Length: 465
Image (cartoon, rainbow, N blue to C red):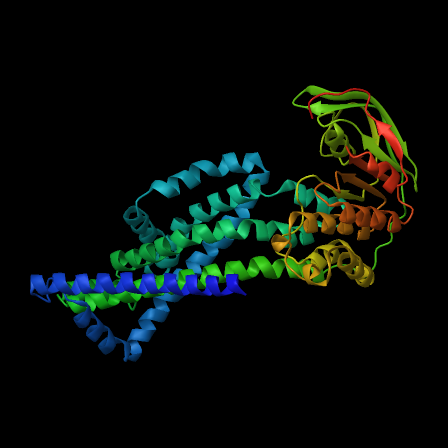
């Protein structure tokens, strides 16, 4: 309870600091306005609020606000949608990236005034606002999405793919939640730029019935208090738009993961298969890690891959999963394989139970829930994976691999970091949920051979892993 109270107090403290800072600047503004002594040159906050109060009670005021908001938000949403789509495509297709880079670079550097003048010639005053906003915001979201997709956790996506989660559900569960935080950071500046560019376009183009046109008229008629009032309206609308958009992005990152869980198929039957390597060699960057490996595991067979750290155990598991290409030899592995990597690969925004439900058909959800609760407890099973301890997360990953309907089970140091009791419980769960599938466990712990009642497979040599 104490940490929660501390967090609440901290949040209130930050709000208080922001309020104090805003008040300080308002006092400074009023003081400078008093020193200037002329509302024509610099109206104070009191005069500005009075002008705003006079304007906002008219129907015309709200028509102007609505007109500009629709155009600016519309252009922003088009830029966001197209920027994200093309950014994701460019991240996966280098040719698209090369093709679009000159145009994106030009858009980032061309002055807004020049853009507005050209747009007035092309689309006229009716479309200049949204078109200008689109051209200003598009490069930011394109670059952000391209970078976010390239930095996605490939281990997490690979694990879901191997355990039978389709491309759409992978994108919903781990793709969009992985890129949404980066897009939210971009939105912090892109929203403000969009409003500045949109109002500038309206002002330069004298688009009738818009915020930009009213700013121009106030300046032309020397109604400085109205000019400041309209400026305050723009600032408030931009602030509200940013907060709303970032909140929607944060919500969408959580919602798409849960949607991916709900889209799980009712049933999926997969027969156990065999796992094999024949005279195989593999390595990294052209360097051979191991060579001449022969391995065959029939349905129901269990083996522990035993070797010293750095001998190539992880490389062998990755080679079986297709993550590391073979330099020689052949591989015979089923399409669907349950895996546990050394690096964490849970979907952090989902609970422990939801992580299992993501890979299991709906018919197996009761079994999946019971398994994860038995391994980590009732409370931890309902908590987001990001809040679990390292040992709890490890046991959830083991449980997830076991409930996924696949043809084989490949685990890389699945019990690392577990205490003796948790280690034994996780190993017992593995034995009880193999359902006739072959099992290969990469481990440096010789106790796993007896815990899993498995044979020992050794690598023919050692090298840097």
